[in-house]
Amino acid sequence: MAKHVFLTGPPGVGKTTLIQKAAEVLKSSSFPIDGFYTQEVREGGRRIGFDVVTLSGRRGILSRVGSGHSSARHEYRVGQYIVDLASFEQLALPLLRNADLGSSATKKVCIIDEIGKMELFSQSFIQAVRQILSGSGIVILGTIPIPKGKPLGLVEEIRSRKEVKVFNVTKENRDSILQDVVTAVQNCLK
Image 1 (cartoon, one colour):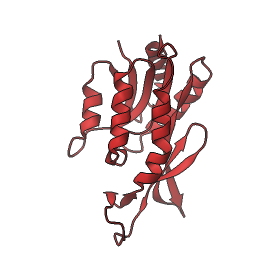
Image 2 (tube, helix red, strand yellow):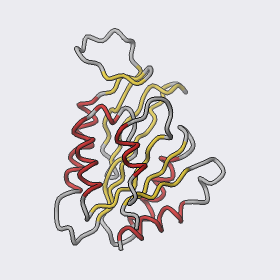
Image 3 (cartoon, one colour):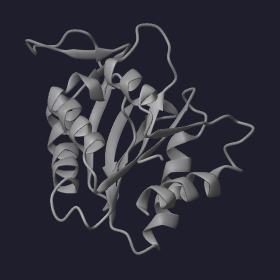
Image 4 (cartoon, one colour):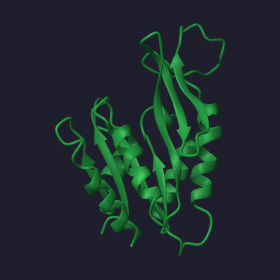
């Protein structure tokens, strides 16, 4: 039986929107829910980066378009984006660590959107996700990218776990699978 639910699909297909809608439906249930999602940041119609936004509305920088002339000794880069690891960890890690605290008798939902290249620069994030995956009281509702290029270790590990249910989100099904996703999470909470 599944313990965690993940959404996968190409960039821009609607995974974040779907996870936000599922979070709203799940909030009305009696189970505690927390976590974060990733949001595009646009300026003048052009995407300039991504922010991490918690379900309680706190916001921090995940990445911004970089010039490539940084004075930083070590720069974490994905394409044109420079990842602000300190900002990401400051916002995301307390949510993940707090999710793992408390009584294992109380089931909780932890939203993790997304476990992708940018987030995987953080070894602390990888450790926290693995700890939740192996625990018993937390159900992750998360997103992972579709395999492309070099495999991402944690993403492939998640995809291959027998206790993980993965929904493939497409433009054709993104508006019709919300209830299936919510039901899958609710079944994990039983």
